[in-house]
Image (cartoon, rainbow, N blue to C red; front, side, top):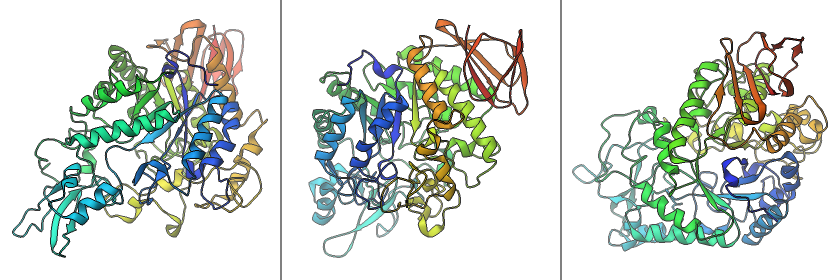
Length: 544
């Protein structure tokens, strides 16, 4: 059974499973909960502490399950609530914790509340649970304000009244199929506390809170006063994101979590302008962790990495929360591809870049991340060194923002291609019936089967690093690092227990004094008695 270790989340390595792309048990080409359950021993062997599952709730799948129609039901494509219970039980038997997504900013337009609100018309009391507003203009033909959807176009869609006449507008910061809840309405807060308890009663160990920064909107829903608002996200205060009112919601959630034994946690997906704003979400009476998107967005550059590491640790220290570190997830181009391209291209790329360079940097970046104090997140397939699939044909794509103008790039499918387990089969072991997105033929040699036992493989590097991270007293939880003198382009820091990490982010070998005995390296290092040559784009762990 799962060990109820105190503060387990402070140094946990949490593995993100995107269920539709992880493992398919019933052969329909789509991953499912029974598929995940069958692969739990693999995750235990990999050495992670917890598994975070992206949404598997009942949903029309307008946005890959982030449009939830029923928060207490499992979508049939993934299985049943009984399958979820079995997965949680098996995970606990393997000493793995289970974290599930919760999506509180918006529901599906097929949620019973929203369907009734539309059907019953402007007088429906259920309209108060969403943001319905009269339009502007002579006949209400213009949206209520100038907000733009994250997926492109206006953030408002007009309804049709029961008598067929044009009706009010409703707010959706994402797809039109995802109407935003109005968190000023007490029924919304009550409902989500009930939803949390439903899943906690089934045994989940925590929640990843989708769009945690979006629940509260500024009073009066004021205009922003300009277009191209997506360019401002994460860089400026927005009337629909990171409003101070969200924090009282999370204080109430923390009280619910604290009712349960075993240290149940919540993790904020909070895109904020600064790390200091992110820290507000993890004050002692709020959530436990927040994703460090500033770190994810930092390129493979020593000066930039040192700055974001220092800033992250400094921001978390006053609130007593662990820093988190992440390189990839289901919404961004995999880091093995980002680092294969030049700097300055952002986190959603369309070019494969230099595969060898990207993989070398990805290995080095992984060891750097796992050496930092706090908790780390691993996205499924990164332990195989998978690149993004940048050449998916248009007809295969399913990212909803791909089909909308002026929104996100719409190429998130590239990081969501089902992962390969074996060298052979219609989907390289993903399932017996192919895969919902086409897999490259080169992935046979990137499969778990091909890499297992190969000392030079990405998979064995991850297994070795996670085993050392679990056993070494200088790794895991902590609040700071001690920076050591190093040449330009090299990061070197010490932690307790005689641990030292050196990372050469340059494209050339660099010679440094030997810090001690090498524990693990992302590349081949050359020693003599006094010094060591760090190859280009290589990280080494040392014991002094």
